[in-house]
Image 1: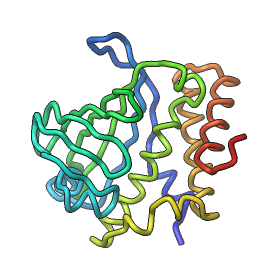
Image 2: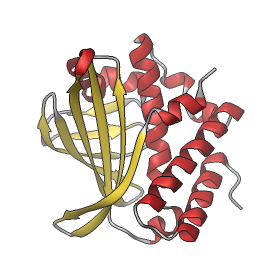
Image 3: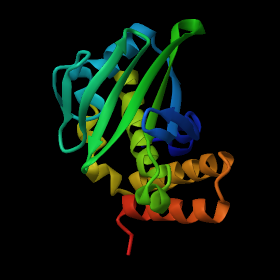
Image 4: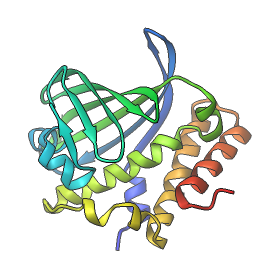
Amino acid sequence: MIDVTGQINAVRRRVGERVMEAGTARTVTIGRTYDTGVEDLWEAVTTADRISRWFLPVSGDLRPGGRFELEGNASGTIERCDPPKSYFATWEYAGQVSWIEVRLTPEDGGRSRLELEHIAHVGDHWEQFGPGAVGIGWDQGLLGLTLHLASGADVHGDMGPEWAMTDEGKEFTRASGEGWFSAHVESGADEASARTAADNTIAAYTGTME
């Protein structure tokens, strides 16, 4: 059993803006502190073997300029890398291009903090689903990372699509969606529009969208 409330509350969520070459984009940022050193956390989020244990199987050249592909999901190009502090990559999915930046910071007591920022230009998809469209997926990803770091085990098989459709998985999705709704409103979004987008996203993830 997963402590859904505890896992959701351990994560900080922010919605904002970032200026890119192509114009101003919206940002969805998720962060969490882990009971492990920054070198171990860096290895967990940059090596194919470790990524495959908590997120998705990944293939490609995981170096600056290299291409990667996550099985059944996104692909992209690693544009910048500054070990063990940060990397920046394109995120190419369903014909759309966005970007991710992962930042690691050492903290007291041998702990370290991860922040992942997903950057995308606003379009119809954002208007319909809001930040939770990517935010819920990243919440699920960080949950997998949390469980992996706690045990070192391969938890990918336990946290896949089948788990997401269990009662526990749906509870986690709804709690995550509410967290992103709150972050959206805190960013200055109209509350009614943010509510509609959050409801749309939760329904899509839990298989109840009409």
